[in-house]
Length: 240
Image 1 (cartoon, rainbow, N blue to C red):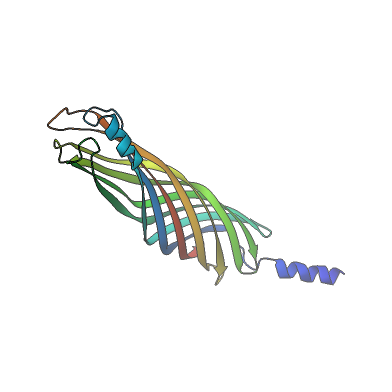
Image 2 (image 1 turned 135 degrees about the vertical axis):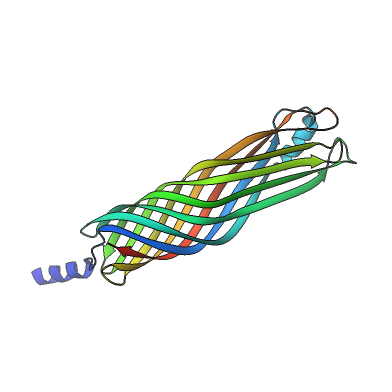
């Protein structure tokens, strides 16, 4: 009985000690979505009817996919088969999307308004906890933590009624939460290959802009956008 127990234990033990400091790089692809909205804040040039019209089509989803690359560094401690650790990472994003709509005013059917909504972000950084299970040369794990990026909004409304115009440009830091899972395979005592999926949802960035025109100028527009990102990555890491 003792021999059978020892044999079963050996089959489930970790052949690699994943403890310690590590660093590496990764490449992959991301798919991002932003809900971008433009609504009337203070009516004046745009009256109540215009406000309701804009509200009906005020929010659009801006979707984009692209490549990504980045770096990571972390530290872990293994207890039997269980690994606990923390990891910091930074990677590029390919978020640069705009949506343009043109429609006639319900109040002035002979005039048209054009709205442009553009959202962009170049990178994201994160700090996450890792909880893993090590067995033979494999490590599987889940990860969660905080993330940050700099999100830029560029919104414009213009028309050919009375040269109505409003432009908002804002760039702001925004925080989010990440959740993911992955696996690593140890090639040697120090080198391992890594695959990871990571979902991140960021908060909102909002701003207002004034409306100018050649007739009854004034009033405001309210602009808002968020960002969520799915990422799939492959990489290599070195344990020191």
